[in-house]
Length: 332
Ligand code: AMP
Ligand code: TRP
Image (cartoon, rainbow, N blue to C red; front, side, top):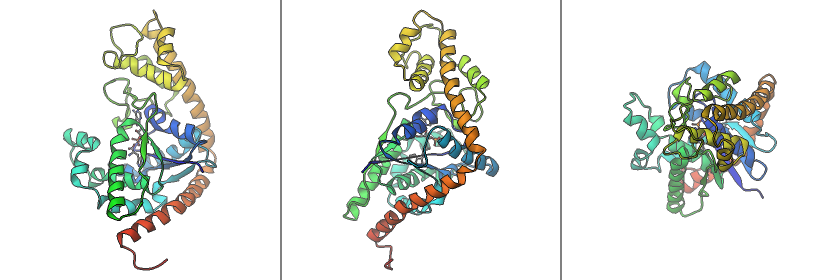
């Protein structure tokens, strides 16, 4: 039997090159060798305020992009998180088995709190508990994510081990984060010390998968580099150039060393043009597939079928957990 992989994306905005290289592309690459469970984390979206119409569009686009990027609903289980109610319920149970000290150590929340952002929600604080439930309902071996999510997967393991121990049975398999070899952290094109992120709104540092190609090209041509003038992989001293090399390598399959060789003695202008060609080529393929998907009515069938298959796994798992805890009275 194939091992299982599981991951989700939280479309609080449009998917971008970071979500594609760090996560989505891995789902596609692994769907032949693993049973891939890929969901759209809409419960996680509302941990920060959302405009209802925009959220709906982002969710639809996210499903369509899963398919456009090559996830095959016959091989993979694709669903919307809220269509499988066990997520929220086990999420609550996980909250009750997680210490506040553990949540206080989560860097994603700490960073937001440190920025002095007013009115952070309780949901944002406890979201690693919900994420742990998302994972543990399905007993996956690996969780393919960008490296910003590793800490959350670690917490998930800790709480799973605690519950296995407390209730004296293997309720959950302990999952492992799986980062891509190249591109576990794609940086902003305008601020290469920070990750490319959709939460930054519309900006020139982030390439969205649905950006018009000329806009994507412009963003790459105006990406921040340095005054060294040498195409060389050195994230510490040349973070901008190294980030562009990473993007190129991840998308073309070319090694970093080969890229250095190709651009030896050439200027950044020519290098950026090369990166832009690779990126636009990939975006073009994705966007053509997206147009086909979005103008069909396949989304409903995919989501209904995915939710049915996911529920068949999640339902018995939640029942097992609730019985182990002693919360159930009736036989079913
Ligand atoms: P999110 O869109 O925040 O739900 O993230 C979806 C997935 O994409 C997660 O596995 C993230 O770790 C990954 N991801 C998001 N941004 C980046 C980035 N800039 N570089 C690499 N992976 C990323
Ligand atoms: N927290 C992830 C993110 O923000 C999205 C996510 C939610 C997820 N549940 C998950 C990823 C379970 C992997 C497994 O990127």
